[in-house]
Length: 302
Image 1 (cartoon, helix red, strand yellow):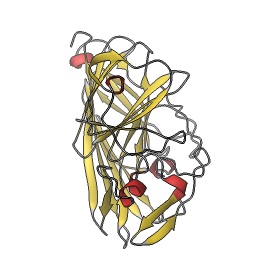
Image 2 (spheres, one colour; image 1 turned 180 degrees about the vertical axis):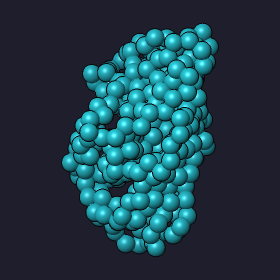
Image 3 (tube, helix red, strand yellow; image 1 turned 90 degrees about the horizontal axis):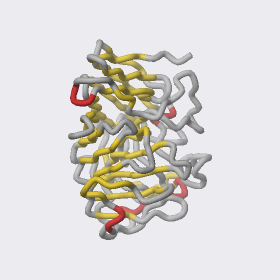
Image 4 (cartoon, helix red, strand yellow; image 1 turned 180 degrees about the horizontal axis):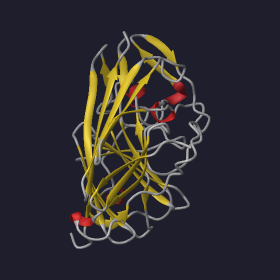
């Protein structure tokens, strides 16, 4: 059995499973800090952990990059770096390896915790890095802060984000704005950006288009709102480092993923080709990338 750490604030609960890739397995919040608590996340099985074929639920960290790297290859300082492809995305990589490694619980009190990871260089990522996730729970909100540090001696490409699985109804209304849309290929790699079409953003609350979808948005303003099955509204407010948003819903419509991330899918290779606004960063030895976001539950009439 994995060790589970529970945070509590009023009726709110957040359950953490550090050994399962630093996952948040469950989150209950009170609308506006008063009333009956609502389950926010599609459930994650706390007693099970497969680092390659992971259960689709909860929230996990995207580090040291998000999404795919095409052909599992990067150009770094004029040399090609070959990575280990992910079996579910081969020949590409998928979502970094932080969520596939056991994290350590550095500190914990009633309503807050810090999980840390010291990741050695490996075939999945040939740079040593350190990661830190801080969590602070209040009755109506969960604040998450992320830090990614290059702990190696070489310059490292870097990115980060969170991958939540929200409870969802197909007719639920959403709000999110962005200035760019990156059309995905059939293999879920991004292409050059263009202005979004009307059905690709939601400046006013409205449902998603029908069926499954995977949209890559750039120039995201850092705010999104999700209508949960009970009618409560969940706000996501992210720091500017998270300038990209992934909107993913599977064909079976069981959950919804709104992923605040720092860069677009395959952003490192796109940037190397001269594509602008990919959101990619490079960290010198000892340098860090950091940012945070808040998930806040509002009443149905908010």
